[in-house]
Image (cartoon, rainbow over all chains, first blue to last red; front, side):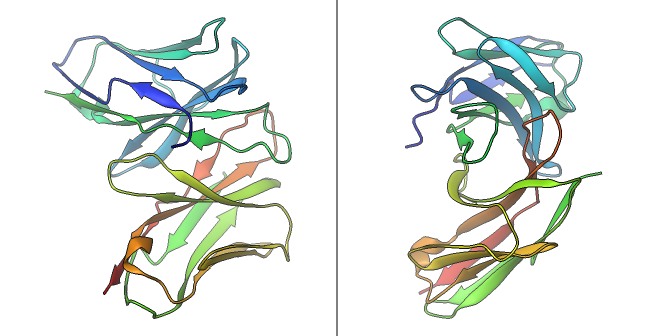
Length: 115
Length: 111
């Protein structure tokens, strides 16, 4: 158990809908990262937040957005869902901004199925 | 562009048969190379971080090594419970703290 929690574990929805995925980082961690894992793309970085502020963006679609709240939990919002958005979504957390020794620990993931 | 290539894609071994997994990388300055283990339907589990060429880390039957262009994960006398997908990732220089992952090596250890 990494100490990172994600809810829900599974999510099944229809095309065009909007969903929210939730992540609670390990105690004391200030950074939260979101990754998407699909069969053909592997693990792809989406976005990073540090202490409530957006710090880095990867290939995140405009239909996707995220935020980190004062209690440091984070939410990933996916809207106008398409079939191709079906994937595993992982949250990771780290103590700091990514200096030496700053390791990302991953949560158990949310499996999103878009029908 | 930062890139990580892992080989082989899949590897099947007998219990006790040692082998190595390869991770080749092209990165604009390396600020860490990471190995993770991922079981089906689960999140990646952290194994090792390597920072400079020549560095080695060990944990039970696993040993990770790093050169300027690649990393190896050596598995000595593996057991069936070592079966998993092993992921290699790099953290490049720059403002983003993202990890760039390879596609992974799916390892199966037969009893």
